[in-house]
Amino acid sequence: MSQKLLDLLRNRFASDILETSSLHGDDTAVVTPSRWRDIARFLRDDPDCKMNLPVDLCGVDFLDRDPRFEVVLHLESLDLRHRLRLKTRVGDRDGDGAQVDSLVEVWPGLNWFERETWDMFGIRFIGHPDLRRILTYDEFEGHPLRKDYAAHRTQPLVPYREGPDVLDKQEPFGADEGMSFGRKTFGSDEAPETEVS
Amino acid sequence: MEPIDQEVDETTLELPSDPMQLLMGPSHPAMHGTVRIVLDLSGETVVRADVQIGYLHRGFEKMCERGTWSQCFPYVDRCNYASPMLNNVGFALAVEKLCGITVPERAQYYRVVMGELARMADHLVCTAAMCMELGAFTPFLWFTRAREMIFDILEEETGARITHSFARVGGMAQPPTDHFKPAIRAALPAVLASMEEGLSLVERNRIFIDRTADVAAISGQDAVSMGWTGPCLRSAGVPYDVRKAHPYLVYDRFDFDVPVGTRGDNYDRFMIRMEEIRQSARIIGQALDQMPDEGPVRIDDRRYVLPDKDEVYATIESTIQHFKIVMEGIPVPAGEAYGFTEAANGQLGFYLVSDGTGTPWRVRIRPPCFPIVSTLGRLITHRMIPDIIPTFGSLNMIGGECDH
Image 1 (tube, rainbow over the protein chains, first blue to last red):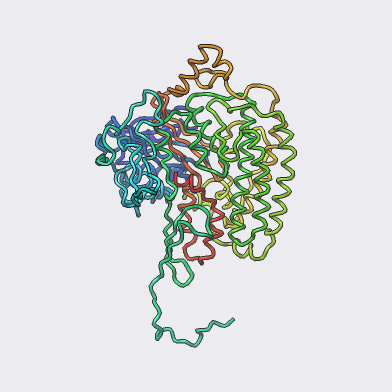
Image 2: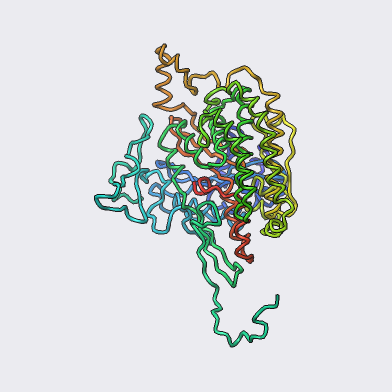
C-alpha cells in the first residue's frame, strides 16, 4: 500500500523526488525544497493520498552536511490509513539560507510546528502568517537545537542575583557533564558568553 | 433584568471603544499549567486571543542529545507528569523499532496494563482539574481519590509515585510483583466507583452543562486539519485511535470500544474521557486474564539489557557488559524511526535519528497537546472570558510536554 504512495509521488514529480526509502515500516520521500508546497498540496488533495492529518513537523541538524538541515514532516491519512514521511534539505554549512515554503495554508495545524522549527533551528518558513519564536523569548540569541549551540550555554532573561547572602546561582551543568563516553562535542570549546550561532 | 443603559444614547458617552487588552497568565489561579493568553476584549467578549507557551521549556530534546539512549527515560517521564508510564513505554517502543527488538509477551502485557492505568490516572487528573476550575470541588476530591488508588499500584510496582522511569529498551526494569494482579483486581472496582460517584455530581448539573455544552465546539474536519489526535479529536466525531488503527504491543487482542462524540465541545471532551476510563478498565481486565504469570520481561540480548547484579559482581563478562552499556550506551543502529503510540492525550510520537553511536543524534518528541493548544486561541475567540476556563481545562494541556 505504501510503496504505491511512493511510486505515485515518483511518477507525478519525477525529478523533484530526490530519494525514497522504506525503513522500519516508515516510508520516506526526500524532495527538493522548491516543490515543497506543491507536493504537500498534492498529498492532501489527491484521492489516492488524502493526507489529512499533519502529524509532526520538525528539523534535524546534520552539522557537517551540505545542505545542513532536514525539515521532516510526518503525514497520515485517516481515511486510507497510510503514513508518509516527507523530508527536504535546506541551508548551507553555516546555517545560512535555510528557508522553505510554509505549509500553514495547506494544513493550518502546522502553524506552531513551523514556529517551533524556526525557533529551535532558525529555518525560515516563507509565507508563514506569524513567524515568531514560540518556546524561547524574543530576546533569545541563536537557535538552541543547532548542534553548534553549546548545550550548557544560558541566557537568563532576568539576570542572576548577586550578593553574599543569596545562594550563588551556578551554571546548570558543566560542558561535559552527562556526556556519554567518547562523545563528540559541539560548540563547547568556545566560551559560552561569546558564542553565537 | 433590564439593561440599565437602555435609555442612554451611546454616542454621547465618552467610553473607550478600543478593545481592552488583558494578559491572562502565565500563572493564573483559574488555569492550571503555565500558559499566557493575551486577550483583546470587547466588553467581556474575546475578539482576539494570542496563546503563548514556552514557560516550561526545559530543552528536553537538547538534553537527550548529550547522554545515552537509556538516559532519556527520566526526561520523557517529566514531559508528561500526569501519565509518565505511557511516555516511558512510547519512547521504549520507538527505540525498539529502531533496533528491531520485540519484547517478550509478558512484558508486552505488563506494558499494556501499566499504560492503561496511567491513562486512567491522566484522564482523572484532567477531568478533576476541569471540574475544580468550574467550582465543583467535590468531584475533584473523588477523582483524585481514584487516582491515588492507581498511583498506589504504580508505586508498588515501580517504586515511584509519578516519575517511574520504569521502561527500558528491551523490556521493563523489573518483573511484576507477586501481588500485581490481585492488587489491580481489588482496586479497579473502587477506582470506577469513585469515578462514577464524582461524575454523578456534575453529569446532570445545570451549571456544569451550561458552561460546557456547545462551548468551544469544533468540527471533525477542522480538528483533523489542526493536527488533533486522541480524546479531543474523537470528541469531534472522528474515530481515530492509534490502538485500533495501528495496533502496537498486544492491543489487537482486546475487545474495547473507541468512544466518539458528536459536537466536539467541552462537554463531549469531558464525557469521552470518562468513557475511556471505563474502556481502559475493560482492557486491563482482559490483559490481566491473558497475561502469563511466568516468563521474562526483558529480552535476552546483552547488547541492550543490563545483566543481573549478582552476575555483574561474579563474572568478568557481565562486568564488562555492564560498563559498556552504562559508559557507551546501547548500540542503536544508524537510521531513523518514528515510533508512535496512543498516549492519554493523543498520538505521542518520537522521531529518533541515530548515527550509530550510543548517543541519540536527535530525539524529537511529538507532544499530543501541542497542536491542540495551538487551536485554543481559535476556540475562545468570540466567546466570553468565563468560557476560557472550561475550554482550557478540557483540552488538557500538559505544560512539560507542550513546551518540551
